[in-house]
Image (cartoon, rainbow, N blue to C red; front, side):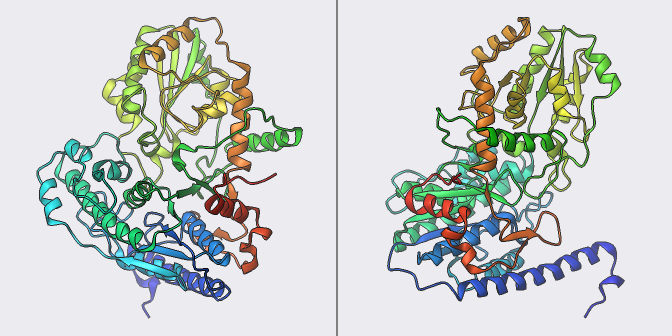
Amino acid sequence: MTDLLSLPSKIYNRARREQLRVRENRAITRTAARVTTEIPQPDQTASVIFFRASSGPNDFSLNSGFHILTSWALRLQKMPVIHFACQSGMSHCVLGTTRLKPATPPPCKTCVAHSRALYTGADVHWFAYQGDPELADRLSSLSISELLAYEYMHQLPDIPSPAPLGALVAPGLRWILRRHNLFDDDGTRYLCREFMLSAWNIAREFSALLEQTHPRAVVVFNGQFFPEATARWLARSHGIPSYAHEVGLLPFSAFFTAGEPTAYPIDIPKDIELSKGQNARLDAYLEKRYQGNFSMAGIKFWPEMKGLDESLIGRIAHFKQVVPVFTNVVFDTSQPHANTLFSDMFAWLDEVLAIAKRHPETLFVIRAHPDESRSGKESLETVAGWVGSRSADALPNMVFIPPEERLSSYELIQRSKFVMIYNSTIGLEAAIMGVPVLSGGRARFTHYPIVFFPSSLEEFRGQVDEFLKADEVAVPPEFHRNARKFLYYQLFRTSLPFERYLTTSYHPSFTHFKDFIVSDLLPENSPTIKAILDGALHNGDFLLRE
C-alpha cells in the first residue's frame, strides 16, 4: 500500500480523501444492508420514484441522507420504491463540472460507486447516456440567449408540449458558473449544450420509466438543477404528484414540499398566534442568530461577528438617515421565481444607485452576502465587481461592505430608517426587529404581509421616494407578528429534524449515518417520518405537529 505521508501535499490530500470516501461507502453499504434486511415485501401497488443526481457526486451529503432515509421509511410501510439512478447517464452534470475546464468529463466512477453503496438492497433503474445527433445539430450554432430560450419540439409519450430544455438547464448553468448574466463564449455555450443534451437523455429515460411503472409519486432533491427539474417537469406533465426536499434552517433538518423548495411555500393559518412558549423558543434562537452563532447545511457563515467600526459610525452621523442595502448570492437571485420587478439583482442595484444619486442626504450601505466569497463556491459575478464597474463607492453617500467583512448586519439594521433587500432572509429578520423592509425581488416571505413588496417598477420607485422623504416610515403592526410566525414555522414546523440518524463525517459539510435502530424509521417513533409519510402518501403539509 502506498505510504500517503511520502506524497506531495496536494496528491496526499486527494489520496487521503479517496481513502476516506471508500471507507464511507463501506459504512453506507453496511447501514443500508442492515436496514433493508428488515424491510418487508412491498404491496402490489403503484411505486414512488426517487431521484437525486445533484445532491453530491462523490460524498455523502445531508440531502443524500434525507433522500435515502425517506425511501427506507416508505419501504418499511410496504410501499414499493424505485431509485432512478445515473450510471454515466449525462455527458456533463452540474456538480461534476470543472468550471475552468468545461470539457473535463464528470467523476462518474466515484459517483456511481457512491450511488451503489447508497442503494444497497434497493430496486434501482439505472440509466446511461445516449446522445441525440439531431438535437446536437440544432443546438450547434445557437447563441447563449437562443440556447436558454430553446424548446425541443420532439414529442414524448403523452406530453403534448415541447421540452423547455433551455429553461430547465438555466439555474444549474448559472450556479456552476457563479454568475447570473452568462458570457456568450465557447465554454459557456458548450456547457449549456451538453446540459441540454443530457436533460433530453434524462427526459427520454424518465418518460419511459413513467410509462412502464405509472408511479404514485416522484420525490427529488431540490428540483432546480436540470436532472431533477426535468424529472419534475415530466411528472407534472403526466399529472403525477412530485415532491422536493432541501436543507432546513436548523442543523441536520430537511424541508419537504410539493412546491419549489427554494421558494419555500408554507401555509400559515391567518388566525394563529404564537404562544408564550413558542415566542420564548423563537427568541432563544434569535439571540444566537444575532451573535452569528448559527449554521446551515453544515456551513457556519459567521466564524466571528463584530460591531460597527468608528469610521462607519462617524460617516453615518453626517447624513440625515441611513439605508442598508442587502444583496444575495447568485444562485438565490437566479431562481426562476425571484426576478419579478427586475431582470436580476444587478439591475436592481443599478436602480439603487440611481436612487442614491437623487438622494444625497441619505447614506446607502451596500452589504455583500458573506457566502459570496465562500471558498470553493466564490461568485464570479459579484457585488464588488458591480461596485467597481459603476464606481459606486466613489459616491459620497454610498458605502460598500465586502463579503469578507464580519460586520454585524443587525447593528446596521438598528440604525436604519428602512432596509432594502433583493430576496435575502435578512429582510425577514429586519421585519422581526420592527424595521421597515422594501424588497426588490420575490423572497420566501414576500407573499405574506411581512415586508413592502411593490407590484411594479413604478410603484417601487414611488415607495422608495416616499420612504426617504417621510419623517418616519409607518409599518403595519401585522408585519412584525407575521414575520415572527413565518420564521417560527420555518424553524420548528417545516424544518424536519434528522439528527437521530445523521451526524457530521470527516469534513464538516459531509455526512455520516448514526447507529440508529430500524424501528426509528417508523412514523409512530418519529415525528419527522410521520410528517413526511403524511405529506407524500396522504397529501399532507409536511409540518411537524405540536
